[in-house]
Image (tube, rainbow, N blue to C red; front, side, top):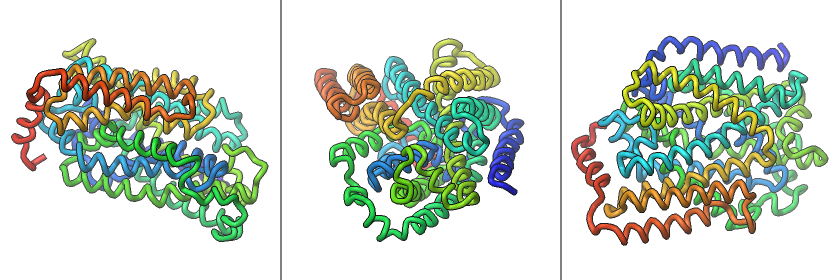
Length: 473
């Protein structure tokens, strides 16, 4: 069986899982939060949809080809963010999901603050997850296009249609089961290819000796860029829809905690695999384009290594792209369609709207995604757009005085500033998180101190609900 045939068999099996689970999606509860029945076994691979994707494999290898091992920091920042989430806000989402049936992060923000703040979250999520999804068809096309001799643009459109179908048919539980397959393939596949690639370059000591000294530094391109990435991504995880969705869909707090923890820890070694591959490519294939580093060095190792690498990357992308579409669908269904347009929408009406919006968003994002230049730059920037929202929630859970006005204006101004800064190309070489958090924190503190010297209604409601829930969540 050739690598191409092996890839086809893998994609067909993924489709069959999604189609099999279509019959279980009878309403929005099943489709968006798996009827709150997720256990540890399904939570661990689901977390890969947040922490690992095509941009975090092909993109990491491409960045490692240009600057070395420091390319791992986008993924490692996500791990830091996951730990922060577990420490500070896991209980918040579990309480709201179990006691009130909340299914989205913007819904949680409405509970804690008001509807205006909820709409800011809808804006932030629309911008951020549109950026992230737009990268996935392009990343997959860079691998499958050469394999099937189809040009990149055409392949990107084909793959986007595949992602749309998988999302519409699978829902959260379907994606979780598909991710069991994807995660296993991408972890073992990239581990094998990384070992072969480093051996191809003469072994780790020889590979590092042949590269500039900076390639072995974890502080490239500079210390403050790394700090900005870590802070921006980690703080944004307070408002992570994937982690919140796991909390909403988990069958218990224990399952949510341990599933998220183990899923995060697995990312730490995995992030090194594409980085090593990119560095090995720089040694052995110094004339290629950086975006081709992972696939080119894999093909140089032999057709089977190329096939394994392709399956690993496709596994990463297929674990991420449908999950990103589901985030957008959840937000637009719960916070726009039911939240504003049709508050009395039935379960089946919400399900149909979710499936329809997945198709629309998937096609629009693919069109814009074909024009991006730096994959990892887009990923880092997208997470930093969300950072101010995460910070506001974390502060509000520990500072009772944070009021609705302070939350709204700090999130609105900080989010718009981060998005504008990102799309402007990071003026002055400054990451979006710094102007966003600087202005957002000033507004948050200033407007809170200018407001009533009393606990906010949202804080009091949450405390009462938390006491009622006890530990049985």
